[in-house]
Image 1 (spheres, rainbow, N blue to C red):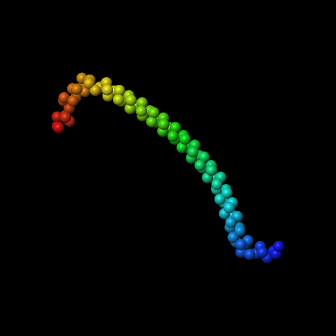
Image 2 (cartoon, rainbow, N blue to C red):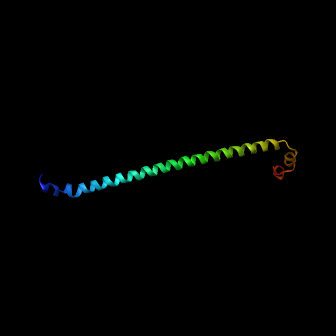
Length: 90
């Protein structure tokens, strides 16, 4: 093979750029895989926490509904309805 072939612009300019680009992409793919794995772990952790918050809010809502049911016909609420200034203004 003629050694002058390696002095062509492809070998002196384009090939080193292509090799550098290939190595950069290859090394970044590992970082992207690591970041994707971390995001998946964070997402799973966050979903678990949000599920727990939803369960707590449902329990609170159930308790408030029970309190509302108990107070629905209580004499204090009937008294408040008769003397409430808000209803008197209507």
